[in-house]
Image (cartoon, rainbow, N blue to C red):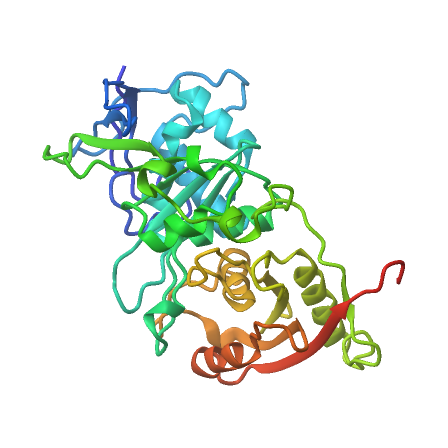
Length: 394
């Protein structure tokens, strides 16, 4: 059976703010598998979308009896609205399984629907091109992402939707990703960034089929392993030559502490002291295998909330994310710093505390200061030095 879904406006239990301006949700049909060349290993499915209003069929009951909304389209809207409003851009494994059971689909096949809704929250003041991403973790949870462009800064200061989704998974403690769906085929920058994941070559990437010439009533997607999109790749082992080292998303501790006598642990301002401790925690979890320059950062907004980020490196260098960029992901996901007339509500940032190693090959203080001066000129920047702790030191 094919479920035809149509626009519901603000109905279906979705807040009006979340539903306003959304196009008709996309309903996934059953997967139609077709033979494909051995190298491509494409898998295709069709989705049918009606142009009339209302929903033409009732959903199957949830196998887990979780009593989801009767309208499967509304369930997708509700899941994305809740994730982006209160759940830090994360759709829990339980909600994903409930929707999958209701629709009779594999959770992976729901990802394009989540993308379609998430991309409305992108912040692209320069390109005006909204990109969404939805990554399925090994835990069963789904992590959403959107592209974020920073006005007044070079284009390479942008955050890509795939990076946003991966950092969201990282913040949630996810250790592996099984699949990711995107609005369009990932750019080379993002393909290289995702190549830092364990088992990246076999991770499934779901994209719209560029060869689909049908009407909007027939939506076809391709499912490809990342190795097909990034053949003959350059990755972590080309630089580290050590398979035992933890990769992106995997647990690590960099063994850092504040430099004795530094202002971090002894700050007289309680909020600054808490921000310094949080930034140090992020620096200890930073993924910096190529430069040995881990760094962490904590933003404090106008409500006193903190949003933390860590450096996340790429073997190709350029796709590396600074700790400020990772913290901006947290700010969008946790504080709703969404789009406004200036491209983003960055003026809400009141301070940033950066913790990095003195003399490390990579230093972030200058870049962080430049970006903040442009997007949050009133924000105060604190830079605190850390160092490798001696074995056995507390």
